[in-house]
Image (tube, rainbow over the protein chains, first blue to last red):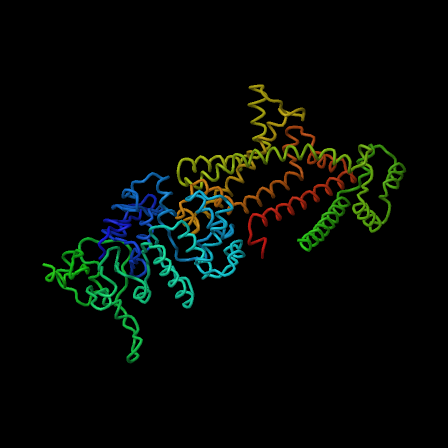
Length: 333
Length: 305
């Protein structure tokens, strides 16, 4: 996809749900993702497919009962040896989070500390990572608010989160995430909780910042419209596994996995006759990965006997296009 | 802020009027004080003379009016028992109560807040279990009993500390520790609950994603957000104790307001009861007001709404 080595690489990442006193259950498995500088990878899938836990895993930010079961997360920043986030000491991990890795969360209403002014919440990151003085951090916080498109930043810097609208809070969240010019930006459904008009503005801002700061962006979303407009490459996730990976263009023009096709077919057409929406039949089974059969077999319109007997692996079906489906096994073979 | 203070002052006045009215009613329901003030073989004449001196032969409405007027002017008259200004007696006992209360609260806070935070951070671990055990123990042992146990251990058996009186700092240790244990239990539980709630919120994940130190996450952000219920609980304890830690003052013969008030009630010393009730009510209102102001300063949402 890109010649250069990825800035952040998730290899074979599997997240487990380990409730107190209960048996651990895998909820994602074999997740491989590579983020390249200046490019956006979209991770799409339905609710509960494991997108958000993958985002948290990328920051090594899983908290009990969730934990990283398998895998490595390699961070390559200029002028430093590649580091495996799963092997860093707590202090090294803290330096990476907020420093080289920035994260934006889904719900800006709850993601900010209600008892602190937004300026302070930006400034404390600057102070922790860049060692700025109180004064300098405050001034930089004002600049960052300006950068994310907040009017009257000198005044807003003293506002508390509850005094700001949802869109403005998400802008503050973005300012926090990019405060220390991170190499990687992880945005977990950054627009899901916002009004449609605000969504477009926030995505525009993310695109612009990504280009300006050369960040590698992981954009988690369930909205294929967002993917089409913002992503360079796309990974489709279903039941804790990546079932298809391709450039955005290839995915929309030649979707390979029946699940991806179903997702695209369920979108209402903008032109042409109005018809009933076409849902993918069936329900997403409960979280947890299975190994014995194809995860999509129960809902797949093209299921074959062998889909029940074994799980198809993610294989290349075209240059820069991979799918985990037996329909394409002959092509690959 | 000014309107707030004016409104609060008005509310305090209404509270005091209410408490005073109830007190007046109770005093007059509790029987004729002259029977207790005079020896049992006193003549009816002597009793009537005394009632006349104390104003008890006046119509009830007139007594009530005088009672309220005295409350308003702060002139509560002489204690019938000690023949000294009642208010002065109470005010002289107040520092002892304040000292005991603040020592107990300080002791309770010093142990409870760190313990509560630890219990929340390491919930369901042995630390949490230990903290719960201490909390249950502290809260379920009545202070007169735990006080006696401490006296038995440290005064009677080990002879390290005095069991009574108020001479010097050593005399403060046992009563403050007894009360402190009880208060600590309550504050620990509310600290744990409040911290658990805060640490489960989304913004804590944001703080960690920013790479902040655990100290900053727990104390700067966590405790700040968890502080309003803790401060409210401390305020409740503080006002309750300033009103007289009656039991503890009795067990340790501590010369505070609580013991004074109870003795005054037994002696039917109306002016002294009146003075004690007035001082306690005022302290209560004042502490509550301070707690409200403190909570507002800790939580911008309360402050700015």
